[in-house]
Amino acid sequence: MSRRFVAPQRGEIPAGRFGHPVFAACAGRSDWLQGDAWPGTEALNLALEVTSDGDAHLRFVEQSPTLLDDGLHYEQRIQRDGRIATRPHNWHDLFNALIWIRYPALKRALNGRQVEAIDLVGLKVRSRAQSALTHFDEGGAIIIVRDAEILALWNTHDWHGLFWRHRTAWVDGRIEIAAVFGHALLEHALQPQQLLVAKCIAVATTAGAQQTCAHVAQAIAAGTVLTDPQELRPLPLSGVPGWHPQDNEEDFYRDAACFRPLRDGRTYPTPLAL
Image 1: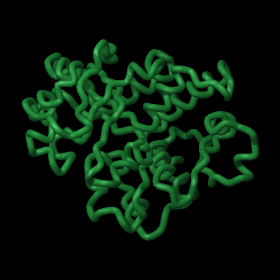
Image 2: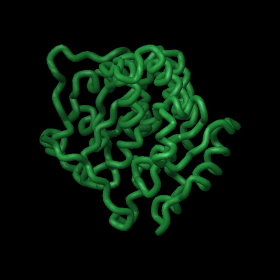
Image 3: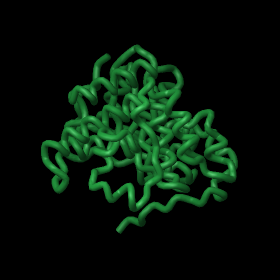
Image 4: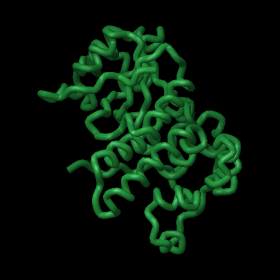
């Protein structure tokens, strides 16, 4: 049985950890991440007002028994009342807030689809689409692929090829991380030795990261992606050159537990085109 991940305490985070590229969505928020005090909902809401395209409907509210007594599902509460339940002094919920602030269109698209599914199947059943939406929300990333050879390596889980033999692909634009989106993934990244695996939407495009993320948000809202968990591609982010303390060792790409072989019969959909 795998051990449940427990996030380190605020004062236990290694110095400089938030400079790691996995935390790119948190850029400019070092005071919230490294200061002695956790940010309150007032500070979070001020930042959300700036990035949420004038959607005054949305706001972070402290989670409490009174809030939860309204009988609404977490996602329903967001859509109906704009209230994003947020636990104080909690890494998971702080990273969720940071992702709302950085990628509001993506979060709104996920919320809309979740509520549609709840309306369809109720609160006691989870559809395949709901599972896909949740997997992406918690552990997702958006990856741009601009080279067929690199895509073929990813398709076959040739991790040695993707991360070692073609290391330059990660700096020359043949493959690019447009966004590390999952807030649970960011929570796990607090520990430098943690092996990180994202559940990804792949996009074939020459566009940049911002345009790509906007396109993915539109596709999620339209229901053309994230209809089944099997659409999501695993990508061991720890293999990206410069992302893990051992990624300069070739054996790391053969031995580390995150580099799993492709299961028999497993295939992935064609990348989303932009």
